Image (cartoon, rainbow, N blue to C red):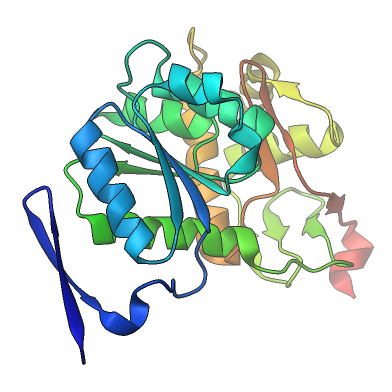
Length: 259
């Protein structure tokens, strides 16, 4: 196989020539990178451009905000430790204006950073140091979930005792009693936002000022659904409020289950 040697930032890569200027699907075509490590951001952008992407680099959240074109990008790669506006706050802003994918690539360690990034609307968190090919695989994984066709007529279902969630493609996800209570509260409120306080009380989760235990429970539930159903979960985070359903979830009666 013919290879082209690529080197940047002290890293070397051999990129197949047939991939130059062409990205293997699925992959976004217009990526925004926000990272105050200028070398890392530029080298990553160059790596992605060789694969056929259009990449724009900003070294601070304020630069992206001043550009005024958040809506124009398909995908965002964001660092958390940005000067000025933090990467978590930037993810919230992006998510409020753009439904595209968000990958956090950060050197900030710990469960708090991980959970806060996902609660802000990020789709995945990758720790630095990281290889550029690992970033590419993460972007592709997120983008695949975004582009997968969804059933137009089928909807999510949940059993009457809230012990099992059923995907539009009839894949079943077992729910713990605590997860079932959380889903029950969301289903009862249909498309309305439910506060963290109300959810914590409904599920009997010990409270705290920042509802860390609740967010961790939702994070584990989201990942379980994505793993077992092979598609995004039917609920979303509402920043500074709580959670709400993002898709219809029909409640099954006992008669429906026995058929």
